Length: 254
Image (cartoon, rainbow, N blue to C red):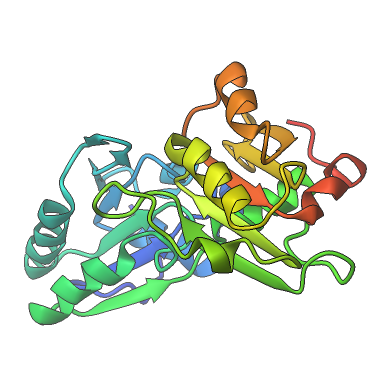
């Protein structure tokens, strides 16, 4: 069997962003590295279709992290990457979206650096831009938003303790990652800090994939709408007047 032509070096860990769901959004470099890897450590997000690019003999290790259901704790993943690299293997750590945007990539390469393991980071299309594009919601627009903010709806201690006054400023788009479990708190806090109840809001589930669902609403009605729709993670929340453009700009028909 011919080995692939690659610069993927043994004993190196590659943190590869696989994008938000559509495997065709993978970068050329990411596809090359996946095809050359000895081992792929992958999450439950972004792996569908991408793993088809792997060598038939590549080892695949599932390390998916879902809400309150971690196949491997983060600390164990960090140690696993070090161990595999020190065995001289070409390791791809495949992560949904972009490794450095709420992907814990920084935590993983901290451990690699501490242990003297060579690594590279390959950016991916992050969920905010990918899901917004496929849903027909531009994150910035001259008539609506001159600022775009990414926030996480789930902090390390399980709380949703954010700078709500800054997030409730007009003229901006706010995208909440991992926020479905805290959607009631998010909407309540934004309204308490100045945004009106009719401020547009949307939820995108399984963005960019064949299972994509887009729910448009407003801050006052969004929690009830999410509950009625049965939407569960993975899903992204977008808050801002750019959401009002969704019905006119939607192009993706999964």
